[in-house]
Image (tube, rainbow over all chains, first blue to last red; front, side):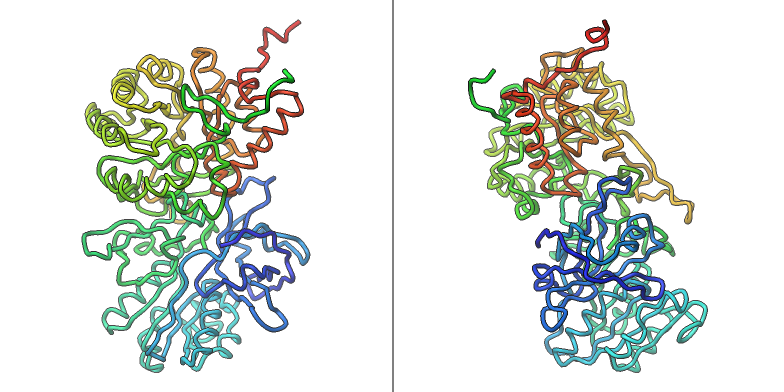
Length: 284
Length: 313
């Protein structure tokens, strides 16, 4: 983990989202899929916490070497709105890469990646790394509407079969990602499932993988304070590895990637409620 | 005034800390996380998160909600219990090279006595901070530290048993002076002013409390004026007592204001969550102010506030 002042190389609008690419070689060379960065807010505003943003791309080689990209939803809150208005050549105070990354399967090959909205951003980085290791990648992605499906063309480029779900049917099929999961698992012959998103979606993924005995990894989203293990606010209820009970793990340093079989969904209120997450609340 | 060397060290009633900028309880992790983020030797001291006798799993998430210039939070005092703390976390803190103050909390007198006993003689413990923000399980009151009788009893017991300086953390959101006087009379070495005041956050879209615990506490820059008021009032009532300002201190100017109002040192919490090097940069800002005023020690700033009577002509 490093703290750097990084220059913004470029910004782009991607549907409902904004993407920022930073020049940050020290972070880019270390970054792995599933990890995040903590971006400081300006000191003269009343929104004060760092924003915790999943790494969407990290380039170690080629023309974009040493760059790192993350994606924000401008409508999520004042912090992401401020980030969305930034332009190239401005600089940001960034700490990263933070958190435990996704692990790659050694033996199994067919990987199904599941995510919704902006949460999909981190899965594209994972898809690239899996493909580079000779794995088959399929995806189920979605959002409320066409605009909130993150880079559907990129999804097609990175994977074999892509299922797109929208609440209003403006892109792909009408319905929820959760509805599409069992069919997608069948069609792709999935052997491993990776997911990112709200607790309610991750819970559905966990339930499906339990019944089908599929190994899975999920990247959780929970409100964070610091992002590096100091404050103990980004709590996720998990079973202890020695079987002696449960405790709250910290999403920032013990996660954000967890084995969903260890998560105690009934003790996680957000996994029960159909939270719509209309707040950036400094979540990853 | 020009003789001698300029030093940031301050004396907290026998505990001399290298700078007057410490990390507040609950914002320092478990002893390992800060190592790569800040040079701990340049931090005035660290207060651990509050440790209880038994392990606590803490409050259900979400535990934090950002508000204007602050956070509303409730971790439910999650901690591994005193035995695991001593076995697994204290050794890591020992290597940090900064004075360590262990925050202890509970709901009964017996718990405070057992915690103090367990810490007695432990190497690497330089002080104890008595957290009094929890509910009183014996007298069935919502907050231990809001009542003079219990503060006297608990702080008195800890102070009598402890071999290291004892700091009583006076809760926020209450009339602090009577509580501060009770803690001082009971034998506290110093006072931390104040704990986070009680607060609440509502999620209008779901029409539910934002925090999993329901209610929470307010921290962050929004608190500074409340902290300055508490420091100024208690400094007047207890002029010789070491006072640690806690709540809303996030810049060197904030820290200097707290010292001028009567604090001996400051604790920073939310500032560290945002910038882990804040305790060091704030200390550097205090050095610059001492130089500017040709002072040799932050102790010379302490209580330097000109009162309304003194400035009135």
